[in-house]
Amino acid sequence: MKSTNNNPTFKSYNRDPQLYDEIFDENDNVRETYETLFELYSEHSAKDFGRLNNKAKASFFNQGITFQVYGDHEIKEKIFPFDLFPRIIDAEEWKHIEKGVLQRSKALNAFLRDVYHGKKIIKEGIVPLDLISSSENYLDQMNGFDPPGGIYNHISGTDLIKHSDGKYYVLEDNIRCPSGVSYVICNRTALKRALFGVFNHYQAYSVTNYAENLLEILETVKPKGVDVANCVVITPGIYNSAYYEHSYLAKAMGVELVEGQDLFVENDFVYMKTINGPEKVDVIYRRIDDQFLDPLEFKPDSTLGVPGLMAAYKKGNVCLVNAPGTGVADDKAVYTYMPEIIKYYLNEEPILNNVPTYHCSRPDELKYVLDNIQNLVIKPVDEAGGYGISIGNRLTEEEIEKVRQTVKASPRKYIAQPIMSLSVHPTYIEDSKCFEPRHVDLRTFTLLGADKNFVLKGGLTRVALKKGNLIVNSSQGGGSKDTWVLKNNH
View 1 (tube, rainbow, N blue to C red):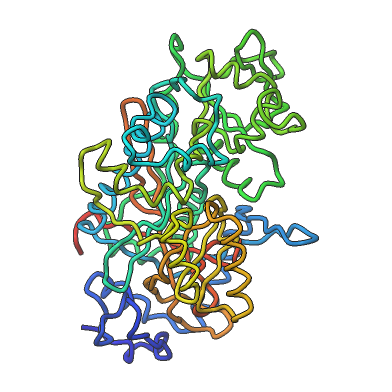
View 2 (cartoon, rainbow, N blue to C red; view 1 turned 120 degrees about the vertical axis):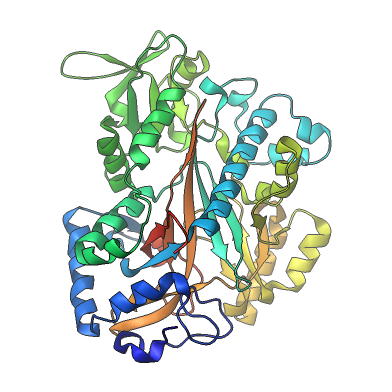
């Protein structure tokens, strides 16, 4: 058993007994999985970590791994903050996570199919009609339409937290345009460059096989009659906050990265403009929101999409990944029904539990939320990136009253959850030049194809870099860690 006290780098590390620390147990001893790593890290001084931290930052900067933060009057480009201490998930724990996220992805796909076809789950009173009809992400255009291969959510990002009871809970499902997978791969590259020796001591799965699996998934949903699918990634352009990821994935798959102006529709087929003339496109991995996809169907002033794209899609001549209209199922209000959705379509008990959630459209739950805002996290159902969240115990009386009035005015738009105790992980803090506990979550990536599925063995461990902060999103000042899934229990 190793203790923090024997290690100069961790001598100022203060474990909070109220929180689940992923490395140190309640007696301040290092958990078995981390013992070898802890020993290796103890060979480095705080000064070494400062140098290695700068090396990792330079690696990210040189690769152009940045993201954009939208302020009131400007757009700032930032290096994605990366932490040198990896998170380790042992084989047994991962098996549970992988089964659970695959189960959710399959259930969500079945739910989407039903919502746009027979609506049986609504007719049987399990999910209320107004929950679906009032969703801004429900698309009438998808009613009765069968996407190629029968898949809606080809790519799912499931956000998990580890609670103080040591168990994983699902915080939310992201199936519109889940982002962050490029950072998973770049974190691995940066850590290998900074501390190559540590990898010789652990048998961890590679994460660099994501792009080849994504390409295979795209090829399984090619339109009928197509032998070799021509796939592209469509991006809103260089000013999008996730543009680095769009270009990275296109390059890693060996496919073209295009913008709306690079494509056109003729006779309900999609073509790409090339120097050798038009080239037919069969599968489009889109990183553009529904409303901007096709100015003839949605926002008429959109310059990001392709006029006629939805008509080509509805004729079955091109496949869009993820399918338009999937956002109806990643609404945080639908999340509250996930246990019922899993049981209804798969006839199985949920493998991963939801965080207890109150939906403010239910009168009794609304009353509870309004009376207990100080003990809850209030979230808008359709925002992403950590925006619009209110954490009750951080608010003044005046701010609580303001949240109360906002929720009362539009109950359908809000859910509430208890303030969960996210696990903490040692994180190198530049200002103090030492490791301190910081809250983390985990985004996993699941791919569903017509006859294939894949869960990336690893994920994006996001870190709330501000002390005591529970919001891990990069747009809110969060960073990330490399995540190792072990091939066998270490």
